[in-house]
Amino acid sequence: MKKRGGSAVRWVCAWAVSGAIAAQAATGVWSNVSGGYWADGANWQDSVVPSSAGSEPGSGDVADFTALAAGETVTVTNYTGSGALRFAGLAGDFWTVTGGSLGLANAPDFLAERYGEIRVDGGELNLVAPVNNGGYGVAKTGTGTLRLSSTHTYTGFTHLKAGRLALTNGAGLAVSAVIVDAPDAALQLEGDAQIGSIESRCVPQTTVDLGGHTLSIGGVGSARAFDGCFSNGALRFTRGDTLVVTDTQNVTAVRLENGSLACGVGVTVAGWWRFDDAAQAGKDAGPRANHLVESGTQTQWLANDSERGSVLALEGAGTWLAGPNGGEIEGLPVSNMSFTVAFWVKPDSDVKLTAGLFAWGVPNQDRRYNMLRLNTPASDKPLMHTNWGNNREIPYAPGLMDGAWHHVAIVYRDGFYLYYIDGEPVGADSSTVPLQVAAGNFTLGKGFSSDTFKGLIDDLL
Image (tube, rainbow, N blue to C red; front, side, top):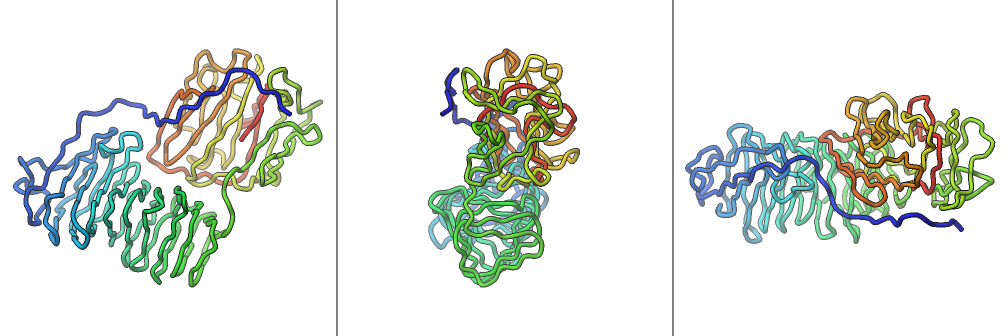
């Protein structure tokens, strides 16, 4: 049994966002019960025309169409940005937005997540106008239906939080991942369509009704886990790494042009390295048996710590642990998949501050890898790398070099990084560009430079 000592870890479950909150966004209220041109101020109450997608949290304008009569059409003449579109009606009501392209970002309702929002409370919105700029993503909310019938080229995520998202013939989200966030939300095909990737984050699991059509999956972030079913149609996986679905599928056909489809595989923990087994320092206590192998030579790999019992002890002289077969780790988060890395660390006083703690992916290629290393000369600010030009500093005082054990956790989801040290949130960062992390090259105690870590590590999860 491991001894457990030191300060208790207090987890704070909150999303933190850096940067100042911008001024209150404008709200334009459509006052013409009939349709018309978006850019015409006469159609809006007090001539307030929503025209900004916003660049800061909550700063996007709101376009309120709740007074628009059923069956009417709003025409966009030029590129138009806003934070949110809002429609409301009864079952059977429908509206159309057509014409020029739209930008959606930073709706007031999504201060932390910073998505654009399309809210349809009852009825159906047929969005013919393409969304070319989605910022951090677009959230579908409300109990009604959003129908997409054109090619949308925004690179953010499409979050299905409520109601129904219908993809009609020719609908394209090739560079966007569809995230199903609620069990009562429905993704349905009304014609052949393409999406970049798909992921389910709801319990109980949901089902995608293909409606006898073909759903092509492939693009940015195409390595995904979908906890649910695809039914009544065909899947066509066009490019990427792996799509994992946990339930038995009821589809007419599955066509793999590039990549792989795995069914019935639960995706949980890539590995849990407790460093308790004297006979195998890198033994994985998790279900995947991703045992790490020793690289380099040192007298012993494990040490008996007075606080934590058996721990990994690295001497900093060219020794580290790595995944077998070129650093391969089954279940390792790749592409733009969400992940959490957590571990205990106690650096030695003379550790090289450029030493890596962990890494995986393809080095020297932007957004193709994840790496955490100590930071020279500021040991109070470890660095999280995803590319060499945008290192994410994790501020922490008095730093990690005080001779004590510290618990470090890094959470990544949809472009957001959250950093915790000893259970306290110490920083957050974000990027509008999805990661494209590759598999392989997993190392512990070393990054992608020659410097290796000197100190103690425990309970890497």
